[in-house]
Amino acid sequence: HNLASPHKTTRAITQAMAPFFLSRQALSVGLILQTTTAFQSQASFTTRSAALTTSPLIAAAKPTFPTTNRMNNTARRMIGSILDLLSGGDGGMISPDKALPGRPEKMAGIDGLKHYVLKNDLQEVPEGYEQCVFGNGCFWGSEKAIWRLPKGIHSTAVGYCAGFSPNPTYNEACSSMTGHTEGVRVVYNPKEISYVDIMRMFWESHDPTQYMGQGNDRGSQYRSGIYYFNEDQKRLIEASKAAYEKQLGKGEIKTEIAAASDFDKYGGLWYFAEAYHQQYLSKPGSRPYCSAQPQGVSLAPFDSWCPEDLKEKYQPALPESFWKKHGPRRGCSIVRFDNEPISESSY
Image (cartoon, rainbow, N blue to C red; front, top):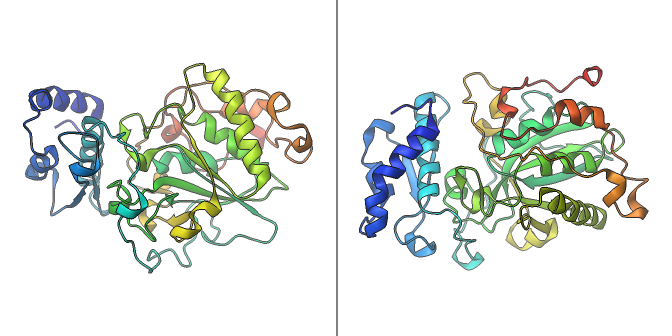
């Protein structure tokens, strides 16, 4: 298989599997691929039960992989994306009562971990700093878009947010059976960068009109969502959403908007992902993968949509010259950019 050309591979497999889907006689594409050992080296797959999805044939499957085998990493994530794509991947959310139980133990390897690029502690929130949590597709590229902002970012981290199972693993979250979406947590200094700047990058870095996925990554674990920690954030999200929906002009924005506190009864909004996922795209040997679907449409001018009483406090710190040079373009290109934060002198 040509691992360097995933779209061709996807089309070929889709065409090859068409008779199975048309006849509805295949028991499980996941089982077929699991027995195809060319892609596997004692890999462990967790497959969603077909009874929990609207697909009549298969359930989404996503693998857990080590960092030492790049070929297996590529193949396994590709297989998971193909399975999600072929199964529809948008059958909705699992209900809390059917979600996996999770565990009380925190993710190993996070305590004391430093940001690979910014060098700050991944968990700390210094006094006076604030948080932003969102999901807009595969978290590798989503995180990189934020840590590259030129100022005010203390740390970024990837993890699993807005679900029902405490302390999920990657394999569990990607089974769609925990309710989490792949997310990014941003710790930032509001004196140097505005919440509005981070939120704008969130909107423009994906297609929020896509339901339960981005591009070939399908399933509730890739859904668009942004989660507020106070009433100001809620109002800014809702006002900017209304403006961006009009600008996109392609239907309703499907982004999940919810309070962080809504998830306290499930153990909390946010859980850190495995250490090897943190700042993944900045590490030697990483695969330059991104499935987000930026539309190349800029958010309307701040003054045209921001509530009047919030304008002074939340004025953007990044000028339009930044967005014209460094803002997201149509199609995902973040993987091609340098890992270091953008220089202020560049715009």
